[in-house]
Image 1: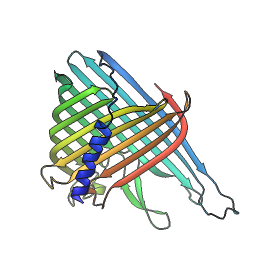
Image 2: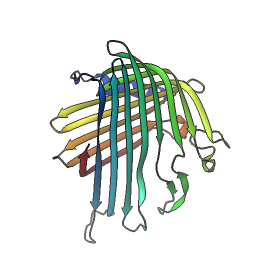
Image 3: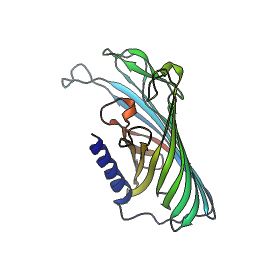
Image 4: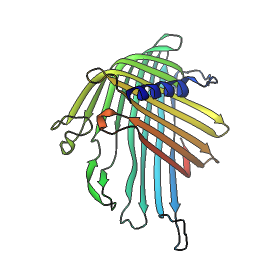
Length: 287
């Protein structure tokens, strides 16, 4: 399994970051560069009593906020990205809406130019969720909370080296990256913490890559890859977090969005990758 994870990680790096030859050649200009979008999507399905193929009617909604605010001054850069993603759904027969998507993430990176596209860098990452999560029994009834706002929360930070071709193509390598996991006492012993503990500290190496490309007119693909190896425990086990966002613009305000995310983290005590996929058509506002 470890070899498979390592091979998969290398494949993601090569395919997501280096396979494409046509990279945007936009220069990095001084000053602030801000931009982002809000995407609200809705999904609905219904079946009457005569529908013999079967199915369960449902309603789902999702809101995604993706915002970048980057600053450049001479040889200094400061790049920031905020992602807030939340969704709910309700099946026929359920009494309430249930959360099916919840992500709050902030990335910040400071760099001082060395030579060419290389920078000395220091990065910070915070990742958590905004709402309570629950475990459900076979009858789809909640049997207990598994998470809530800022529990767990993951922090990563460390010095390193940044290779930045443009705002759409960059890779940061940190050979001394610290990672801190904090949970509420209600979840002590979960999310990689030891039984009775509410914190876990790790020190390792991190690689974070970003690549955005226009596949064709009005269709763009955004790739975000994060790898982490903990020097203090099972360094051969590489944590993998890969997200692909495919945006298809119908017109100025209507767009379709496909998101695929694959996570491997041996501290979660799950066998294999956690996979998330969402697709929706809805209202898009760029700012």
